[in-house]
Image 1 (cartoon, rainbow, N blue to C red):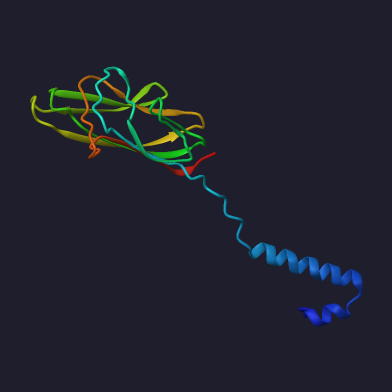
Image 2 (image 1 turned 90 degrees about the vertical axis):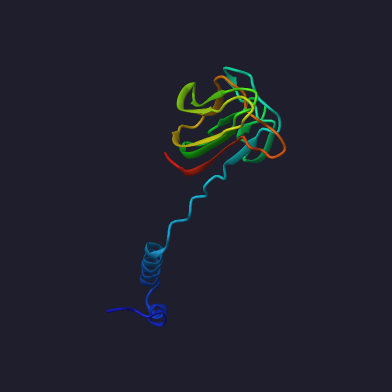
Amino acid sequence: METTAFEATKAPLGHRALLAFQETMETMATMEPPAMKEPKIAFMASLATHFSNQNSGIIFSSVETNIGNFFDVMTGRFGAPVSGVYFFTFSMMKHEDVEEVYVYLMHNGNTVFSMYSYEMKGKSDTSSNHAVLKLAKGDEVWLRMGNGALHGDHQRFSTFAGFLLFETK
């Protein structure tokens, strides 16, 4: 038999406390847990000038977005502030003074993917690639130039971007 709030006020003090406790527990059982606040992590960098330092990390001359400031503009490296699954994308335009370009997406010093672009000198060519990576807190991701040269100008044909999809434990 259910007790109404009015009837509960007539009950002895101990019984009222028990009824209030039961009501609180029932309310809590139907409540949604508080939403965990996902960190906001995203960056996008581009080349406003040509880049041709072979076998080195690509340093982007312009950073359009750096939410959380986890993309290091001096090194061109992204440092994961939390463990999670991240999405990365890179688009490039081969500089017209070279025939081919190799670029590598690096994760803690290991190649994740390679990009290759070929077109005779005097012509440009574009290429892109994407990756979804599970990173641990502190992992680093960057692009390494193999050989060739990348085109850079005010139109930003060569870009590197990434963002957190979701956090993992």
